[in-house]
Amino acid sequence: MSDRAIALLFACALVAPSLAGEASSGNPTPKPTGCLVAGDGYLRARVRGALDLDLDWKDAQMECEGAPRPSGHGVRVSIGGPLRGDGRRIRLVFGIADLAEGGDGRALRTNVTLLFEGEKRLFATRGDDKCTTDTASQRRVETLGGNRAVYRVVARGFCVGPAANPAQTERVVITSFDFAGRVEFGDDDRHEAPAPSR
Image 1 (tube, rainbow, N blue to C red):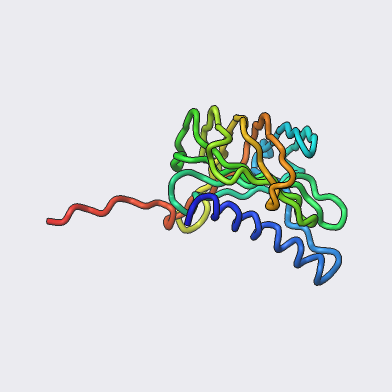
Image 2 (image 1 turned 90 degrees about the vertical axis):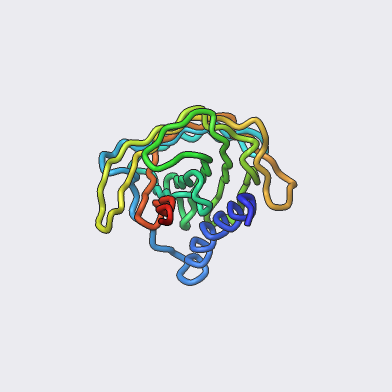
């Protein structure tokens, strides 16, 4: 499955729980907020086009998740902003190519999805040829059970091409982004090359 298809499936999976919560209860239970144990997560982003947004989120307002991409090449970082009325939240998902556990990188191809949870609205770059992560670095900040570890990932970048809605009728450009989020790795994510046969 292509990264484009995976990104769209991931976006839909993120939106669906919010919509289901609204339908079943009318008042979904929010997940705990806060990104990193040290409280030093943040996101700043500038969005122009069909929407003009200047996002500036602090750790306590954020909901963060992160893991290796399904392909094993790079990481996916999801950062949700402040929870608004009726379970609505803006979320940005960054798929950063070629970033290994604990590694740093420069000029990394990146796909970005902008979701409006609870509003049935999203914009996606549909590929990693429109955005670039200028710099990315990771630092281990937590060790969990079962050989799982959490890294603080700091990244800065920009997009030169648009993210479009599924109908391709609206477009936005994320002209800059800068964040500190989290990525979690476990044993299942550490794919080592098989030992040579004797």
